[in-house]
Image (cartoon, rainbow, N blue to C red; front, top):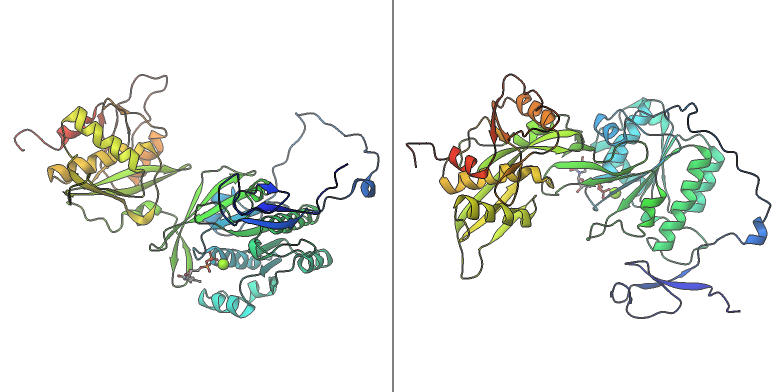
Length: 468
Ligand code: TYD
Ligand code: MG
């Protein structure tokens, strides 16, 4: 019988496993990514062998109580978590280095401690002094109530951490900053490697489930957008939250990518200030705050993030093509292939020729829009830029555009219209309602609705009779 290898080589990029070292991973093609790792210790069968007890099964229609929740006292965070932290659950908070994960978690732990919850914050990245300095900057060190309940530790040793958790058993929330710095004795590879991250997380999660504390793991994201280390971490936890944002902007978005105890797609909006993260309960107003009306090439889009409506400004700048090559399409915050589609439809169906111009498109605020519902606002900004006529300052847009130039209906018309009205806009340009089973949601009475069936109707709005 072949002897099992004591160690194996794991590609740190794609996690392919090899019995021998090679210079190049055959699976993903990366060079020098194999690292030697010992097999994760699976308990030997003989040590644990016992006859299993029979499973106790139950009926589906029994009583079910929703899980109790710890209120984080941060509305934006609660929204993403699904109204608070569930005891015994494990949450992974991922994001680029420097985006504000530690800041967010320190603010949260203080808020929890202030509400008399016992909290432990373990940092493997920063010394206690650094955490204190940050707390001072956030003015968190002035609250005697919070100080009594929050304990700090600087450690990267999982054996130490789990031993003290087992001994103390008093913590309700434990934050590990970050899982990539943690190290488990007996796993022969460096912190941050696939097997270290997996084994450390496993140890902590096992303890969280048995002792019933909330475990929060902070994890860094690689350039490609994946959590550094094993993706398997995402499967091991109950919720995965991503903290995103453009470092050049102050807005930060917390997004749930997975949540066993709540809806995914919910977002929380924060602004990074000199004194930490501020919650932004009304993002639309903030995203539109710097808008200058009466400039050609700008249109307001009523978008949706999860269940939450958000108004954003789409800006377009057209300029004469520079150089001989193809015209430039510089897109920030939107999908460039969708921009090309809208341009092609405008040209083919409405005769608006923009092919020879450079197009710059920007969604202000640093937010990334993925909804096709933004098509109509983008088209409006393009037509406005091309005709030199500003969109009306009190007008907002949403709707998807099809290849024949038809404007298609999108979901959640009612919520979008309400948000448009809430922010004082008086007109909404939206897709024509075609006879489906349900009637169009009633628009708020302050709002005039302009239904648009075809993109050429939109073009006509910019060239009223007598002008042009
Ligand atoms: P941090 O929470 O350390 O990021 P992460 O843990 O995700 O790596 O945040 C670091 C950045 O946030 C840093 O560049 C400075 C900025 N920051 C502020 O702008 N204001 C503040 O009050 C704090 C604490 C940080
Ligand atoms: Mg950090």
